[in-house]
Image 1 (cartoon, helix red, strand yellow):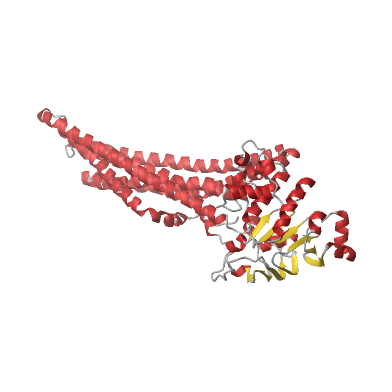
Image 2 (cartoon, rainbow, N blue to C red):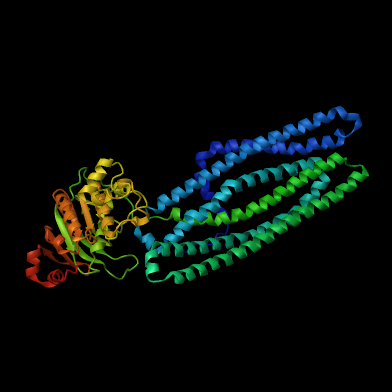
Length: 583
């Protein structure tokens, strides 16, 4: 996926809308941060008095007073710092969770066109690795940055109050610390982004091979994919090593310049104590503020590295969030009739897939299907049968022509409502890593257990489900690996039956069933045919014969329509396919 290089921290501003709901918590955290900083900045003053007056024989009685004051400040500092840390970390965790959810919710609604050109592994990498980087900044990172920023500002003020002359020297030397951060920070940002891209490549390879692990093992491709993954990991490591070199150099430079500056200033301060122009307590106070300043500056430098990396990660996440699907509901929605009749009209539809713009999958396709009618769609491979189903579900929009459900163009009505009017049993069954009960319930979320069981019974799935170790509560494994192909398909049929939509699309729904199971499932489907509009892509003659009409397709066009006997008498493609049982 092409994208511009991250050249600034502007992508982090895109997180502001996610922070807005938690403004009150931010304000409270800011208050605790202020109180913690005041407590910390007051401690060197207390130590100054302890040094100047607490160790004198003339002020023995005041020792307890100074140390108690110092202890109280330490307690306040600990309490306020803890509260600040908790609130800031909570906000960081909450914001990143919201970002991750928003990106996923957006991506899951993208059209198939998006997934034709975007690797799933890269999307997963952005949802996981990139959000972890953002979480580092908006969690611990922002906590450290705010604390360090307050400390730097507060310490500079108190340093000036303590000794203006020494503070001016520090101010002159500060650019020595800041310039390396700015120069090396840009390189860290670019390398961090490149590193995330390489991680996405590795995730894509792993996801692809693990998804088809049985095929990989069947063709003994383990070493091949292992080598591909190894090369990808090595590329990731090389990029990470370059980033680590720059980051290490930056960190070392910051430490050297920070502490070098402190040593020079304290060197000069020591002469001031010897000359009597500064008390030992004042020098101690200045020393503590300089130490706090050095530590805070170093922390800011380290956090800056994380911020650079998070900026690139945030940009990648926002790219996904700001992508617009080409299949959306229109602004002015034409409402479908309340009660769906299942009346389908396909008028002069021409379509080619975005990835194959010069190949027409459907050409001037015209078909009207009346409510309750059962249509069998047959034709050789590549005739456009499955493409028709994808257009009916509005996974794609045709380049020309119209598709109407109950008299309404599906492009002019609510996309979600269109898909609610259609039940689909796909050619490749998709099961989720959950129980049999829940897999069927995906057809209708609010269905009761009884409704789920009835649907399973209608699909002839209850017979094998009851034999599972925990019956309907049995875990089916990832992608339903614990079931045979035929059992998986019956779960999918039960899901479609439970949805009970006016229109049912069966894409070779009985292809994985044995003859006995097919008869039982076909009996259930025959009952549904009485009240539903059904389109069936079938590879078995027994399914085709019972249709009200048979639509014969070839090269994206309808070449014949009729019933079985009629089409057999005409000869042509249908007769040839029927005799070969090769639809």
